[in-house]
Image (tube, rainbow over all chains, first blue to last red; front, side, top):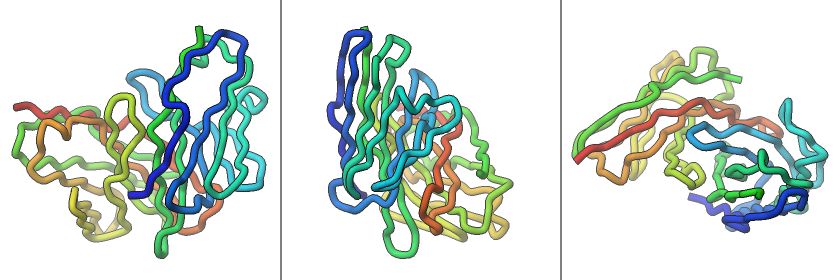
Length: 117
Length: 113
C-alpha cells in the first residue's frame, strides 16, 4: 500500500504553546488530505478535509482558528494546534487520498500522540 | 453519507477463518466499501476495497452481495497478530473532491491461542 508519514510521532508540550504536525504522502500525489483525532478506546473522528491550495473544510464543532490546516502541496499537509490545552491531548491521524486506476484509495499515517501538560 | 453497522466485538482462535459482516443499508451508487485494520497507537491500515461481488488480495477477501447493503470481510487462518480493531467504511471513491470517510465504532477482534 501507499505510504503516508507523520512527524513528529510523539510530542509533549506545555499548555498555551502551539504544535505543528506534518503529514506527507511519500509515493503518490494526494488529491485530498484529511485530519482525524482519536481519544482512547474510541473511534477516529474526522476534524477537517483539505485540497491542495484550498482552505480546509472543518467538521461541525471543530474550531478552525484552533486547528490550523495548511495544504501546501499535493504531498504535504500540516495541522497546527494553537494555544494547546490539556483537553487537546489526543492521537492525531492524517490521511491522504489518491487516484489509483479508476477509483481513489485513502491511506492513513501512523499518527501523532500529543500530550499537553 | 452511508452509515455502517458492525458487531462491536468478536472472538476467534488461531488458524480459524474469521468473517466480519458490515451493514450499510443506505449505500449510494458511487460508494465503495473499504476495510481498515487498526492496532493500538497506530494509524488504520488499508486492507481491501470493493464495489460489488468478490474482491481478494493477499490478506483478505471481501464479499459484497448484489444489493450492496452489506459486506463481509473474510480473514483466512487468523493468527494472534490479527488481534485488532477492524473498520468498515463506505464512501464515494470516484467523484473526488471533498468526499470523506466517516468511521463507525469498528469491530474489536480478539484472536486466542
